[in-house]
Length: 106
Image 1 (cartoon, rainbow, N blue to C red):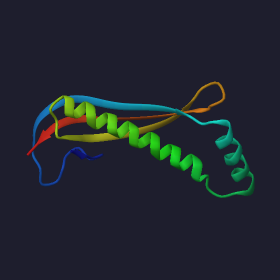
Image 2 (cartoon, rainbow, N blue to C red):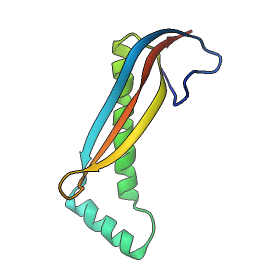
Image 3 (tube, one colour):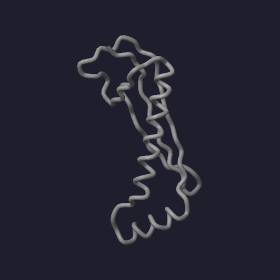
């Protein structure tokens, strides 16, 4: 399945629009990850732990998006937008949502 942020796919013709689809995921960061990320923030550098969690959340959201598009009979999703948000009382939850238009291309 094609998944793209562009409104069309070069070399392909959209023959049918199947509707808007979305995929969401919410992941929590545990205390040990928070502790080590805090240490990393103090000494500088990137937090590989949080980067991996962010990638995991994005992958799950895109997989859900693709699944919902397939359920509508689509073989592509165009105009994909990915949004990130922190949630919870102490901002301990990460939400990633992906949305786009499910289409059939030839």
